[in-house]
Image (tube, rainbow, N blue to C red; front, side, top):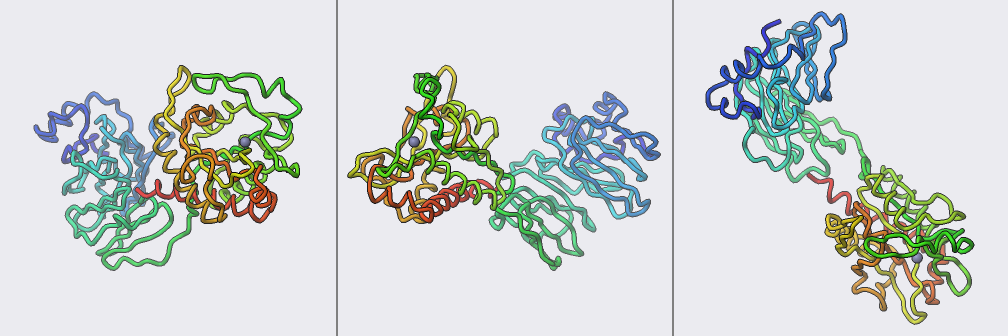
Length: 438
Ligand SMILES: [Zn+2]
């Protein structure tokens, strides 16, 4: 084992405590910074006990000579197992976290790469440059060693080659963030987190995997009202703070002339929607899981989506409009700030979600936009606690007018309700996928 950090080259990871030292030179960086660092992360070449890292491990590299390997943690600390310890960035107080490492072919050196594009070279690993301190469109997520240098890949698929040839990047070609880059002969592969593989300069592409578009996404689905509300006025009439004003905990909802209740419609569409979203890979959080309960109150419905950290949320309703009026409209939040809430951050993304839900709901159901509420199928309101209190992008849809004979006939038809759920799923999916592209 060598003295920690002696062989570091290039202070390009922008260590916070060494800004001035980057000019003075890397030797000075080490002279000042490393001695202040405890001996950890220590080389663990004998590995009699398990070393502790207080930072998440983010990468590894194998030593082709000894058969050992290294682990790197987010703080730049390196742990050696059967491989020579050549130093670490653990004492440098990195501006951005380490995201990976790559080893030289000799087994006597390695590079650490940080999210800001900084590269730290140790042992016989040469320093050929970095993106540290330069503007990046998206963070670096991985690195790969190559003969004569190395390459970095950023989340948007951008490839940065140092000492080796550049043969293309995946910018504009990814549906999700890049996950890794690997060397293959003179070429390289970029792997996306959606499982796709892009090869450059002759790197073989033998296929990838399919990651459904909603994997990693959380959607809150809120079927309005509840089947037990009508028999529990003392509970559902109790006032709650809807964001600077009082409104009832919940309401009974409406029904068709034939007696098909809104809560049943809402719940049925919600379950159909949950099934579609789950099939797409999403985690779905329902604000109620039966149609026989009471509530929850609208503030709780918002809180459920917030607590889930939902990437999108939708409240499903049927309207009780004038009998002559038809159509659906999507209610999006107006900015409302109160002593208990501030929804301004979600106004814009909710508007985007609302527009996509409007477009897809219309296309999938053939339902016209409302001729009595909102405009063009959209309606921005600040008088609904469920939207005022949301901290996640959220919309409320009035799927159709239960008081209108034509709409009531549609809503009573399970085939139409499936189409309604599909429209919601398609709109939500479009919204989420658009945000997944780096
Ligand atoms: Zn309703």
